[in-house]
Image 1 (cartoon, rainbow, N blue to C red):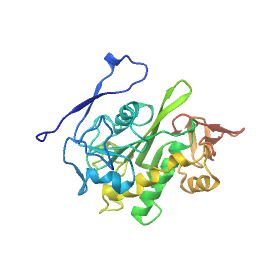
Image 2 (spheres, helix red, strand yellow):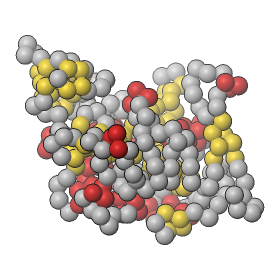
Image 3 (cartoon, rainbow, N blue to C red):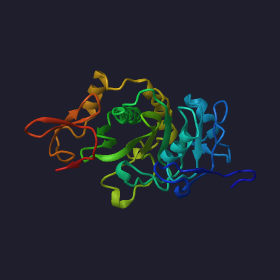
Image 4 (spheres, rainbow, N blue to C red):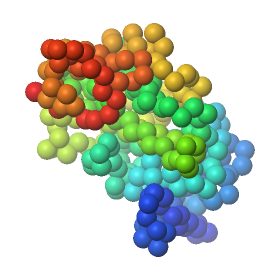
Length: 295
């Protein structure tokens, strides 16, 4: 660690576990700031993202503060820690590498150097956030297509951005809220995008990187489109608009495919509240939670 650098240890907020049982999250190699740094965060190293000093990223993207870490267990967990400490909405955390990246249901996300491992803090007024991850997926897909110069990204309910007929995973979205009684305290959004990071051989038939399609793309190119668009998500209504439903339908990778779970039947699109529609042969049912397995 460079001379004069400091290391801050922050409690990792896991609901339902006593403080003494909660692991400590070590926040290292952090540079921030649009105007002033939120008190628990301190600049402790000189990091750059694709040649841009981390201290300039917040101003570049119009967010209150941005932290860049050499290594984190999870950028999403870091956002939860910062949310508990009162960090402002729009706070962004980026990790060069995640050692314990995760997706839905605790699945492992391989997060090596070269990818975009992003966490972002929201404090929305509304409490029904069923459509939030689908909106985030539309944003990611638009950014991917902009970089590719063509329609490339498709969406797989509930939280995957995929490419090709095989549905190789390019990006994933995970939203987690923290509540006090009936009141939503904050929402943590985690987004992982495979840009130029190595894909483990065992996952090569199920995952893809953006550099396969756009060899010269940089993480900064992706983030320049992604972060400013994400800041506007909390201003949207509870339900997807007609235009958003149409945009999702154009990218819907699941539609028409036979499913084993979350219900046995044929995928029939998504509803405005974010639910997956499944034609069971008897009726069309809406499913708001669960993971998908093809039959």
